[in-house]
Amino acid sequence: MSGHSTYEPKSAVGKWFESRLPIMGLIHSSFVVFPNPRNLNYFWTFGGILAFMLVAQIITGVVLAMHYTAHADMAFNSVELIMRDVNYGWMLRYLHANGASMFFIAVYVHIFRGLYFGSYKAPREVLWILGVIIFLLMMATAFMGYVLPWGQMSFWGATVITNLFSAIPGVGEVIVSYLWGGYSVSNPTLNRFFSLHYLMPFMIAGVVVLHIWALHVAGSNNPSGIEKKTSKDMLPFHPYFTVKDAFALSCFLVVYVWFAFYIPNFLGHADNYIEANPAVTPAHIVPEWYFLPFYAILRAVPDKLLGVLAMFGSIAIMVVVPWLDTSKVRSGNYRPVFQIFFWLFAINAVVLGWLGSKPPEGMYVVASRICTVYYFAYYILVLPLLGLFETPKSLPASIADSVLGRGGSGSAMASGAASSPSTKG
Amino acid sequence: MATTHASASAEPTRRDFLFIATGAAGAVGLAATIWPFISQMAPDAATIATGAPVEFDLSPVAEGQIVKLFWRGKLIFVRHRTAAEIKAAQETDVTSLRDPEADSARVKAGKDQWLVVYGNCTHLGCVPLGNEGAFHGWQCPCHGSVFDTSGRIRQGPAPINLPVPPYAFTSDKAIRIG
Ligand code: HEM
Ligand code: FES
Image 1 (cartoon, each protein chain N blue to C red):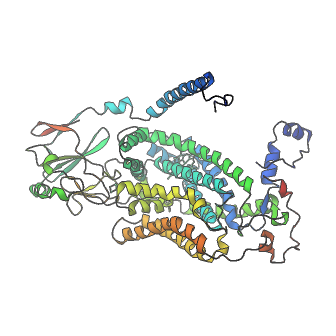
Image 2: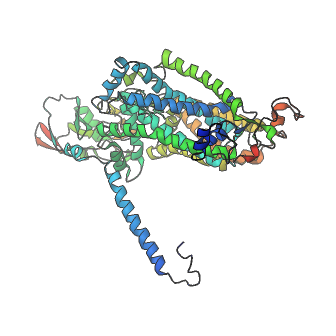
Image 3: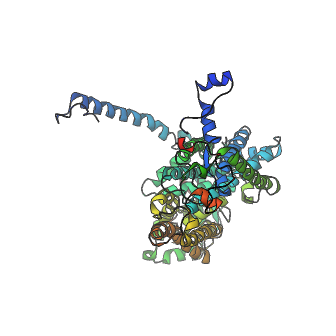
């Protein structure tokens, strides 16, 4: 992904292999000597955490699939058998179910990091859009995974979400029956969802490769938002960032396994331990927490088609953010007015999530509408206008200056350590 | 693309023709190849076969009762309406409705007490709860749609009335759905 590599295999076998498939050189230039801005903070560790979570989901998922039965009559029981009979089955399932939540926590931090530090701006637009695609695939994967245990929430979540497509004028009903493979959510639906749930994480892995490729063309953005000027601004990936990433990942894992072992059902819904019943909808159906803000937007709009459009639009609009934001300055650190709107946006998103978990009546509906308006206004009004009117703070002269102080040229800290960054890309 | 060598003349060449013909044949072949992969998603023959009509005996259904049954995997409500419920349904001002339909168009003539409707909310498919909501018809637990005693949408996000499935009375006390 990085151009020509400085990697020199030591052994004869290594040389023989490298001249036929230069993969060690690729790894070396991408993850060992790759130069990163020296001022990256802990928000930049979530990319590595996300990569770990994808692998964790694939490993626990493939093992679960060895015990799971994708049939409407047997799925629910097969998950209970995983919980009770399979050695460590309870652990594998709880790691997988909570792993999905942790995956989303990490991706939300990762996305808000990008929004705050302007990481979507040129030349990283394609990198950002690939990220939005990964996010969409993650949502589809998690939604289909949640259907697999075939509990009441699985069934009715699947019903509500697939019915979103019935809002499409004319062809909606046909599309929905094609999604179901029947006239309601039923066995064919479960079967195809299992097939797709197995497939999509590997599609995500493919897009992740493109995402990292695009990342390694432009290099990482950084808290100051300014581009690299000299090699003094950079440090090699190993050991500086491998260690930082490993430490952050360890802290993250503590939280993850704490959930999985001590409060494994905290983020779930008790109704999903009741087998799917097509004749009765649970009194409060809510999606998993990570979908709640979008669910609140859906319900804020009183019209079916417009509600569905608003919900999909709230994700689609992220694709055009690089062109909506007119600010010349990347990082929110140097944009005092932007910071106010940004934090309002972040709080707004959390409030939307809370509203999505509440019944759709009275004040909750009014509040959802206000929050939905702000959600879209942030993208459509705030980002374009603020860039034109706001006076940013003055930027540091270089990345090194931003961490080492103004006159920071003479620091003892590994100033020469960055390996020939001029050859990257 | 196909005119690389013929820049001098605007006349299409034989090569242009071959290019377009090949492209067209390829596109048709591609579409024909993709179609089975889309078509397999549709309800299969076994699923369609369960669409055979079902008989339903109304005699055990007491007045005021709502029973649920399935036809083609879809939930259906059979409601034995009380006199008050029929009256409320008939006296509604049809022009004020989101999906204007007279009660008489939703039941069989002379069988006003029997309302047969699909049991999934026309918003996003949840099962509305019977005898709930401002109109004592149904209320949907998911996003709050309210239906009256004729199954017509009165409040909330659902766009249309609960549809009436195809059915006929085979005797005074039995219907056939489908
Ligand atoms: C992007 C990565 C993935 C995410 C976000 C994800 C998410 C989920 C979720 C939310 C559930 C429901 C858990 C529950 O409440 O029980 C689930 C279940 C399941 N997933 Fe995944 N999954 C991923 C990858 C995979 C992979 C690669 C496989 C491999 C086949 C897999 C196999 C399964 C199986 C068999 C179940 C049903 C058993 C159960 O419910 O625990 N998953 N998944
Ligand atoms: S599904 Fe009934 S109101 Fe949404």
